[in-house]
Length: 287
Image 1 (cartoon, one colour):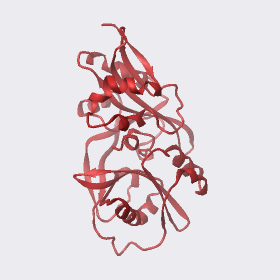
Image 2: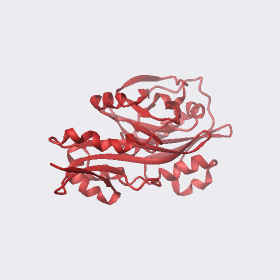
Image 3: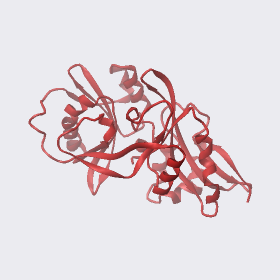
Image 4: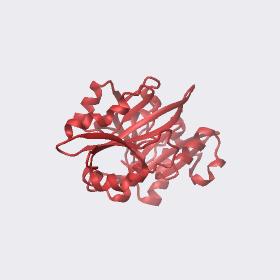
């Protein structure tokens, strides 16, 4: 049957959900999928994904493309595309690769694939993708070490008042993620660390999934205060983050857990250590 690739816009959400996303993960409600179409930050492109459409108008495939413009060092404008939620109905799988080709043909994009299935991961590696992350660090419910000194502040952020924080990059990240989970500022010795997290569970224990750490050194000192506040407010016992987000620093009381499938990326401009999990499906869908 003849098919075509069409661009998907935010207003196509209900059609995509009813045709495809409902079956991709039945445990996700309609409301949980919606942030995939309404991010909260400016889109540098004219679409939010691609769909595979038959001549009769039926949608039989979908790929989400979450775009953002980010700054890395001296590079003022890098367009990052996080591909997500790739689904093709049985009977049309031979056309699945056509959904991702518009992204792969563009060498100007930094492309991330953070939650792929093993077979998809293998295929993307053959297309030039490299390892972004292999392990999660989990802070266990242990007492704060005596070696960690007191002091500093741990403040919950109101995105509407982001102007009160120093630094254009932190201010922009706060505003861009005003629809996502929780944001915190850890402050110590005149420095700040911006933290973006969502709340979930790991083996029935409540956990804080930390997607962004702007200052690893300040985070290492302030994580105990942050966990204390999350424990008091939400009963959070664990905190977890991708290992690379700490830039090689270690925190007492953490354990390394391998990801089910490594996160991967492709870029001609930035390195793995420079990429956080902001502007991606991880905070949007609370994964």
